[in-house]
Every structure is written in structure tokens, then in C-alpha cells.
Image 1 (cartoon, rainbow, N blue to C red):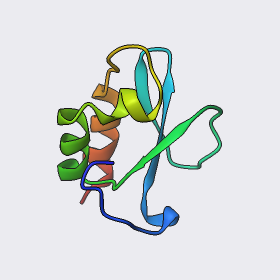
Image 2: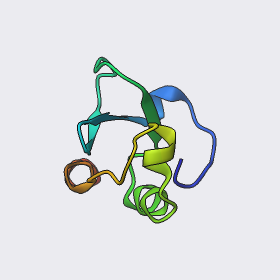
Image 3: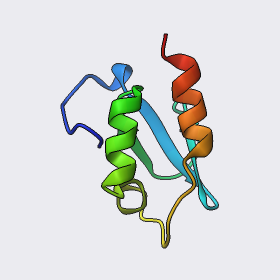
Image 4: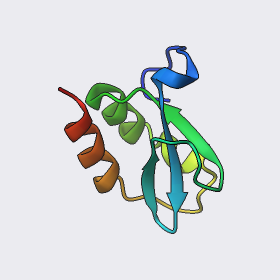
Length: 77
């Protein structure tokens, strides 16, 4: 979603919308529609700037990405 490059599913981070928040689904088991992004701040920032999460997850309004950003920052060495 962010950089729009193709990658294997195992190399991407699944994101789901729970209420008005984007939540990382690292195990891929949370219910609902999912969107995939590289677990890198560059790709995450591009997706947020393009407003890709509400479109991909079919959310009616803007989504909070703070928890998602924190997860990616901690996961990136």
C-alpha cells in the first residue's frame, strides 16, 4: 500500500481496522478486512500520506495510526 511494490505475503505486515484505529496483525488471525504494508516507516508514512488505509479497509472515516507506527518503530532495527 505504501510503496506499492510487490512482495511475498510473509514479508508484509497485515493491518486491520478495529473501531477507528489501525492495528497491526503480525499473526494474521484478527477478523475483518486486512491491508498489507512493508514493516518500514517509509512505506507506512507513504500509506498515511496517501490516505490508503481508510480506502483499503473500507472505513468510513480517518483511522488512527499511532499504535501501528509505534509497532513498526519497535520492530525496525
